[in-house]
Length: 197
Image 1 (cartoon, helix red, strand yellow):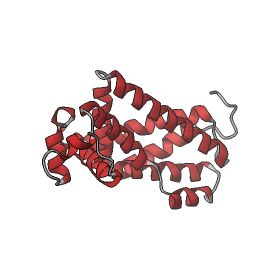
Image 2 (image 1 turned 90 degrees about the horizontal axis):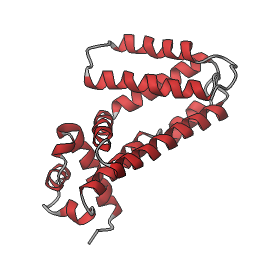
Image 3 (image 1 turned 90 degrees about the vertical axis):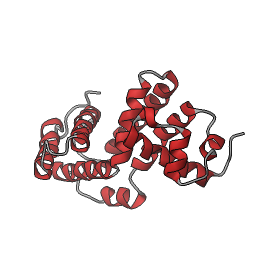
Image 4 (image 1 turned 60 degrees about the horizontal axis):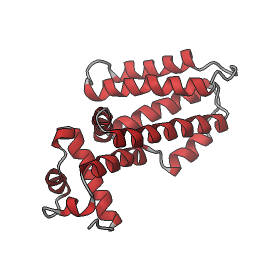
């Protein structure tokens, strides 16, 4: 029987994210999640039908937690509309994602696991497509320079920069990272360019 306490379920999914980041997909067991969540043994198995269900919900939860809060969105909407404002926005994005280190590392584990689990691959593909579409829509409504293709290229470039920062943090200094974000925006975003999507 699957339990319905939404707060407990969210806490267990958050614990699963921590386990994925620390131990990898092979370490993700109901027992490990129970231990991480500090709940009685057997609790996770009462909330998730199976391990695939837990993996899928962990993947969805990472994206949920990576979304900016309303205050951040409101502040960004009132910022400038030039490439300098775009650079600040991208730096904030990199900082926000990097500050949820365990979530991003768990997401990398989930992506690797998705190569072997079609159901998980389908869920992650849908979430990434939704995320890209939301970023493109936000960008188009914002009045910032550039087009949909620029948004997609920045997503790809900055994702790998975040991977470097989280997995090999000594490759680039914080100052180098900021310069790379600036260069990515300056080289990819063409002011008032035609839409190449």
